[in-house]
Length: 559
Image (cartoon, rainbow, N blue to C red):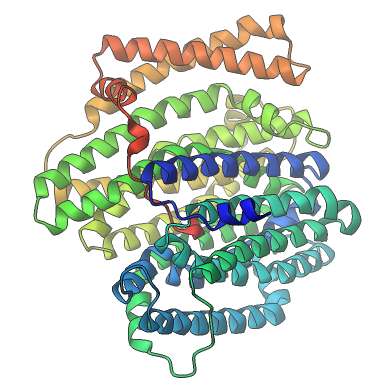
């Protein structure tokens, strides 16, 4: 027990250890996230009950994003460091953190209490298509989950301390515990309490996330206390810095709420289908797009603030090309191998073959915007680095509004135009199953996202890059290679299907794995023939000790 306690409280001053630790736990968190979804698919499956669970998430998530992100780690750390003396928490730093703790806890508690009593009215807007009985279930689940944003928000606050004192083990472990709590809810609480047990698992995960951060913060000498004489000047400054990012995240969340409201009118299980595919497409986005965007941000900020505009441009162009280089092949692989990916990850017990085909089709539609989502994360940070938070905020508003309008328009056309319906169902080979109208929602989301990146790209070129075509060469080279990846992978599916069969987990896994490896090999060969610069850079990077690179950890609300 003493060894465990020493490990939990260990300070990782060596950046190599921190990098390995954070990378390992980030991968573990992703794996647990997929296992969480597989557990939900196995024990509950796409159904009205699971729809209610996913719908119930929306209001607590909006509260968390709208309030907790105002006190994000990336904003609070500079304030706290400025008030610290050496390696110790000074009285001034404690006062600031106690003020933030007091204001945040009070606001979150008041908003959550108001939301608790208004939930029956709010749910009628979130899920207008649900029956009164199902809406009441959403109300009950949402009320349970209202504890989650309070706990996660407070954990986010304590995470400031753990990062400052380099307690990376604690920082990396907390999101793992969050997913673990949900899994416990599915495996152990669901059989006893039904879908309410899963909601309890969400709260359990948030509590575990919170407690482990508290444990580390106490070890660093910070014990939160309520402040009765609050210095609102610093708090107001921190809030104003966070506001543009918070509003952007809120717009996105509101668009998702509207999508859920449209899905509530569709066949039971549609919300589940949408969320399963959304979670799957988020995996490569987190690994590729967000990784490059987060890694590039400090360098972009430093270059711009020091007046080195040419360096700023070069770093921005390099990161954009790398995102395209990696994301386009992933897009083609997801489209071609969609059924194998979904079946291996989610296919179990109550998750039927029809469910697999619908989620696979939805995943393919989402995949067309993976490149766009990665570039949006980078371009928005380029503006943040330049001190312009208004531009990405306005563009995000236009994008979110487009997603809402497209959702309504596509659902209307799909319902009233038989040719359009036949085209979509034939394209994704789902014409013989019901509930295909749900595909209009990821289509609207992807199209709105593409509009977002087109607008950002045009303004980036005007404001920073001017008339340079900085990504076209990489785009077309990667597109050509991705085309061969798709063709070879598609042929591989037909070749290996009779060999491995499609009736067992191992058969589907090997069929998709070997086909994907052959496709990737073909793509690498094409890029080699084209003398692709990004492939050369990758080869050089693999020959260096890239794991010694300094880790830049994202804020907890993004995990």
